[in-house]
Length: 310
Image (cartoon, rainbow, N blue to C red; front, side):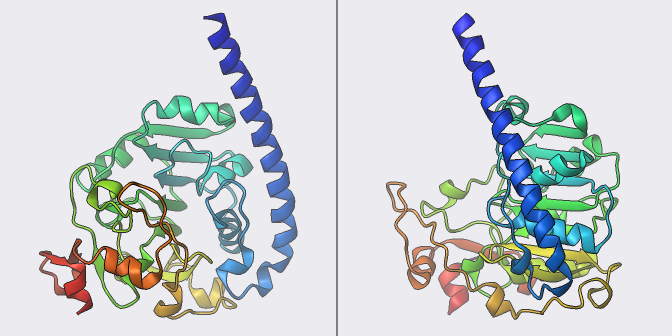
């Protein structure tokens, strides 16, 4: 028993020190980057990775500063253990109010073990598998603060969850992971399946989420415009119409939908679960028979990906 306690103390201490080092290095990079914010023409120009998967930490800092948000509150859905996520660095900077949600077992313990200073802010950790049916209840039960930033990355029915957000949640910034494999002109999403699992839906791990066009049209209805995407072309950043592009982001160039979905990263899997680094053409062929929902028809019946392409 004593050995188990000592091991836990060792890992907690190690993660705490690692966390401190990352924050110090990250803040140094962010402070240097801020001097270029007024001249940035693309969101990828300000990318910096601290705790995010790619360079979202830098983009989020840029958006927060341009929108003059002093102490940004947030909701993030899909965080795993919170060691690599969109709002972790945000929390470590401001210690504001935040709600993080994931279906990971023992989520609270995993988040605490990552070296997080939970006592410094109002971070609420909810272990839950979210769906289009329960998202309103989950958020309304756990969020009683104004939300500045909303981020979702659950590798699945993200579109349906986003479509069912409570009307009371009106963030200034919404960050959504999209599936660039679906291309620039299709308005599609995976079906709204209970307990959707990306690897179970198709072994390749390529058929998940929704197309960028699907999100653009959904966000337009909800009162948001697409400001831009990250360099990897898998995260889209939407801004509330209350903060016009002309006023707050006049230097940011508008990319075509084709440019926004020109993604080259290769994460496809073979039948045995190993990365097989398929080309763009082969990735699309791999999921030919996957069933999707064509949102442009407003019928919501399933159709195979290859039939949509044809």
